[in-house]
Image 1 (cartoon, rainbow, N blue to C red):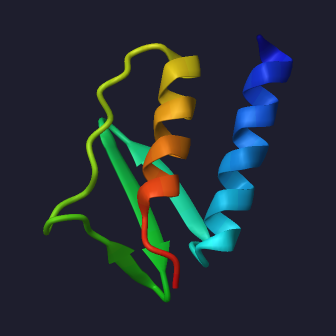
Image 2: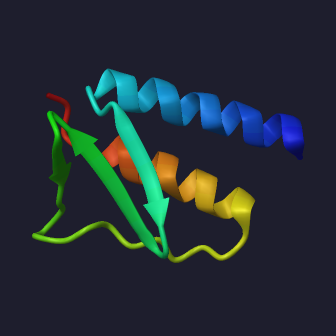
Length: 71
């Protein structure tokens, strides 16, 4: 499980870099993405995470990043 989580985390970093998002944070249930010193909002708000298990949350973050428009 630790190795799988490390691979998902690496994929998150690569996807964020691809989309030019230097800061990816999770606070409470919110995914907070920062580009150019400003937060990226989806529909006027931070994307919400629904998964409760750490492994599922990592995959959910990756999925949300993959849906973000490239810049």
